[in-house]
Length: 587
Image (tube, rainbow, N blue to C red):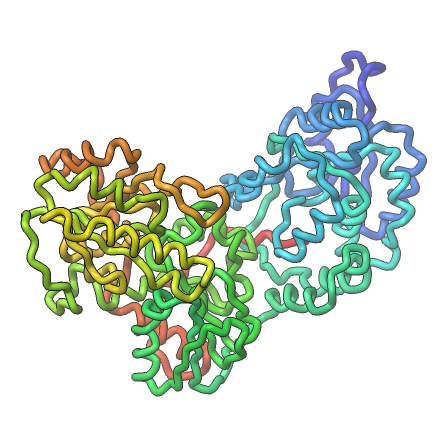
């Protein structure tokens, strides 16, 4: 233990919670901070004695150490410096990462939030309330925190630890420290916790929710209904025997079109099917694909994507913005999305009750190179040149179509326009997009002999069969184009008006060429000459999509099986598995 200028260093009380003598010795021998004292407890029953000791301690700060954790060098110094730089701070927290049974660091979803935490003082009560309501533990465990002794002496007498069950005392101690204080986060991860593959999300769930109901919920204003909804995610589930009634929920025509093949397959199997835009309607079996849903109103619920680049603005954190743990089944389209899910699967918010299955994207039942012989209403249109460039934006805004037409109309290619009205008709707030589409067509149609328009309601996967290259902003059509081996170009400085002010397009997909608007003509000239290379659509298609032609059947097999009806269980081969446990609000 270093002994350099002890008198000038703030003193730290290291509290070892249920650690073995070997673990204590190992930590003490590697800790390079020069002024600390040690106290330990062997059992949660010893917490009253621990609190008495802390109340009488003359150390300046307190830090906690638990079994199954690894602590990086510099943790104590960094926390103390944060306190000294920010007077009035009550707790300093280190972000936490997990490591698996092979000592590999698991993808750290928490550090993705780091940009929000450093340099800010957070209200602990608000933080813990938000975390519990969203089933997302951003505060780690008590090993992540340092507190001043003065703060501990003010708060510890308020904690009813003697009334809390032993297995929840460490969690309760930390929670009560959090809800009474102002927090600063460090910008470096100093704490790593072992999350074994044997860790079950249901371990200690009953004790945790009983503790919440009896104590913490009154402190942070969480209702019993909210608690029950969160707790339901951790109950063990059995296969249900349900009526063969399915309600398909959608919020615009595009979502309804997506769900149609599944409805047809369900009807063929004898299910009574209905569809509705009333997202709060109660149902026996509910199939959802929108951003906002109410799966708690269905006896059995299935969630799938409506968009192949859904939530791309927050990748890889998609499930933390649209959690799936209130659904029974989750359906993903292929290996790319499966990999994305595995990066989040350590979090309970990414895990539906019965699991996530890689069963494909519904449009791939009807469209794709494998189905070209069937035609599926491929538009019949005669055009001037051999090569065709298809313009298909997500939002017509800021004269994008004008950019496209004026930049390319003099080149020896066909310009094919396929706008999108379906996604906007159901919401009056988006009428301006439909108006923009109509205005652009009125401005350009008939002016150039290589410019052609498709009905905006034409299915994109019909239109893409006519083209050699797609140009868009951030639309998922650039991913769907892979089904026909067609490459795409994204103009990333075209604006998207889904917020004020409008933002630039977000395109994180590596199967798309990303350019600026001033580069559009040059890029298309390269394409015409065969010089636009570097992306292989066929390779990406195999990674992004899967189970072509069998998607609806596989999803219905899963629904049959989990609702108590005879089923082909081949779909089980595509259940996604994780080698680690699950992070919960209490581990």
